[in-house]
Image (cartoon, rainbow, N blue to C red; front, side):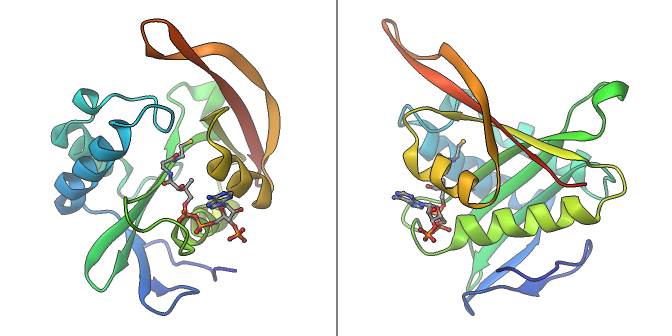
Length: 183
Ligand SMILES: CC(C)(COP(=O)(O)OP(=O)(O)OC[C@H]1O[C@@H](n2cnc3c(N)ncnc32)[C@H](O)[C@@H]1OP(=O)(O)O)[C@@H](O)C(=O)NCCC(=O)NCCS
């Protein structure tokens, strides 16, 4: 289990070589490149590679830096970025207590505890936040590893959006909606 991570600090986590820290704008290029690589295989991210620009990553990181109702973390292994997790606040006032989760372990680093450690830190941050009450996410119905991770961390399935993600002109995936209350 990951320990409590300070909002502006750095903490070593379960695997000794891993460090989790807040994302910085200088990380945007590497994070965007990794997520474009992941997005090139249908069934993981909804975004397509062309929709994941360096600029959008930099803007998002900047907007979440110091935010009271959003958080953006990266995992480093010996100086290399190996994972990225974000709690993105919903934009309207009435749903300001809800954040949407995005989580990736970079290619070549799966199955080493990175996604679990990152999600544990994000949940811990949300539990300590005065604003956030609920984490929501969507995950493709075919994405068994991610669903297993979310269930393990306490998320509950709320329902399925059928034929929601079109991965080719005549092929669709269902999207699973999940939530976790943190307060
Ligand atoms: C989902 C994802 C973030 C998991 O990250 P990871 O670093 O590989 O996961 P971890 O090694 O920390 O494993 C944590 C848990 O995830 C689940 N899990 C991970 N890989 C799994 C697999 N191949 N099959 C089943 N469950 C798996 C298990 O519950 C595991 O816990 P356990 O080791 O106690 O069994 C990673 O697969 C990923 O980045 N996928 C591509 C992007 C993506 O799909 N993101 C989610 C979009 S909704």
